[in-house]
Image (cartoon, rainbow, N blue to C red):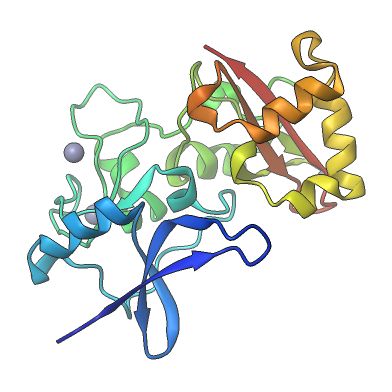
Length: 236
Ligand SMILES: [Zn+2]
Ligand SMILES: [Zn+2]
Ligand SMILES: [Zn+2]
């Protein structure tokens, strides 16, 4: 059986997206690999551990796209919680005394990995960033049923309107149109209160430079209730 892979091309810039998707029944479907090289490696792994195109990936209320941030990726690895190779693996942080830390998206989402190994994906103390108080239920969902993200320092989680915000990603993954909107401009003003990023040139550098080439990261969240954006600057 043949399956087609799909890479998006931005019409305006002509740039190819980094992500490769599986193309099923005329539709761009599940994330398949983070780039072309990874897609070739994935295509060579056995059919038994290929992503199942009809099994819907779990949706994380507080996390827009864990594949884009790279903490989830297509992989032939076996989940250390349920023991199944689902075609995907989580390899972000997991704070626990256990050695296990690679889980399938489903064992992250339903809390079974956090429960089995008594751990947290996101440090409870950083949820709300010390600025707002959140309910036990919200803190539990973010710490034990939501993927983390790659950061220099222990991650923090921005909150607003008495709820945790939804993690949109590092600023390199944000839509330029969102950054240019009124909410985006408000967010920019907040970030530019950081002395090292106060000028327009600093901002242009931040949004034009891939995160791998920066010694600062800018993590962006959005309020699920009012749409306001917030986040923080993380330094190496
Ligand atoms: Zn699992
Ligand atoms: Zn591994
Ligand atoms: Zn809000």
